[in-house]
Image 1 (cartoon, chains in turn cyan, yellow):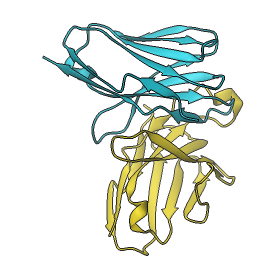
Image 2 (tube, chains in turn cyan, blue; image 1 turned 30 degrees about the vertical axis):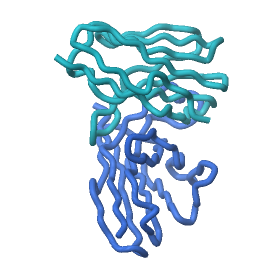
Image 3 (cartoon, chains in turn blue, purple; image 1 turned 45 degrees about the horizontal axis):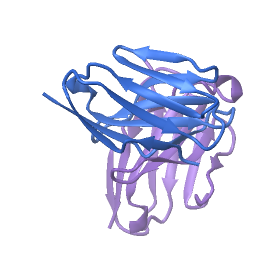
Image 4 (cartoon, helix red, strand yellow; image 1 turned 180 degrees about the vertical axis):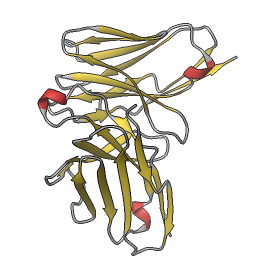
Length: 110
Length: 120
């Protein structure tokens, strides 16, 4: 079952922050975050595992609340290069199969 | 590192034709590969999981006889869309992951650039 992502889209000015949420109705083993630019392959950002950890990749970080079956991706001091569609992929079995959310389109303007 | 090559990138063919798409891991051994379908402005829908040397596992609603998957080596998986029809037109994308099974479930998936399939 697909996780639910929100918001569907967000427009930011360079330097602003944003949060993207991903929630699942099933217990999660892991949450994977990817960014896809138009016409390109999704690019891996980070994985969060059971245990409620937080991770970071430059000024992009994420948290995982296992109990709430939710993850959030934080874009801090956004850059133009952050534009794209962000997908969360949730692992609900221990074999690593992912179900992807509908995506959040992020547009960062100068 | 972790480069996945997908070929072809674009296919246009007549209805009834079978089309083969290749997915190769160039610098790592991919015991597990995944095949997805993506409609415009929509999410990645998992079609099947392919493990080297064994039969693919298909998601509910995906026709096994329509979408044939072969994962004959640690670096190559192929998806064949048999007797393709206009409704099969879509963006097909593969991903590859190191390892098979539970102990590798936390490894990232590395995606190919996708294949845009148009059936006339």
